[in-house]
Length: 271
Figure (cartoon, rainbow, N blue to C red):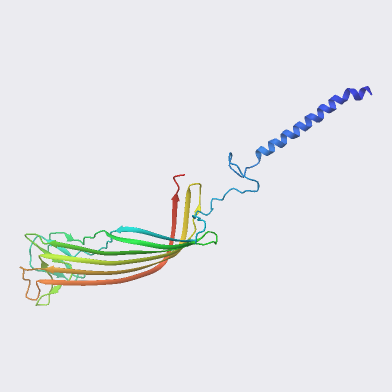
């Protein structure tokens, strides 16, 4: 009986120590578990943290899921190889051509510069129509671009020289190809540009303040061009077969259809 009385406090102390030890180990395991939410942010029971590919579309209550866009553009259409004259400081009357050099290469000495077409900025517009679908928040979008260009250039020859025309080479009475020289040259360039894009894309988040929109679609383009060049020579007579005024007209119609891939990004700086 005395033995039991003496050992009872030791048994109670041992049980308490073991319970404390297991309790401490359980607390340490919880600290090692990975959290499914960031520190300091409240999260409800059975609530998952948002994905970084969550939709980034604008949701409006009671909307029809259609949207319209429009923008004003101010572009400068340009094109290469539209030089229409060469300023020649040394008057020669006629310029011989080297037929073996290819397509009317000038062989006689010309001291001057190429006269290039002057391109101006022109106004235009873009209009678009799109729809947000309910299939994984994908959207479809079509956009039309309209631009009309009319650029006009005029140049005069040097006081002690002339202008060598780069268009409309003539042939003299002996059948030899010659390049006409003039005092004044004017050129007008017209370009009708129509562009249509159709694409399917999806806007999503890659971070708290970064959204992306990969898209795939098709593009169609229609371009109609017209070139009108006039050369005037009132004083110089270049062989009797060459007129004092020459006019050149050219036009080109082209179209294209092909695939389109895009990847747009937005960085949300405010909020």
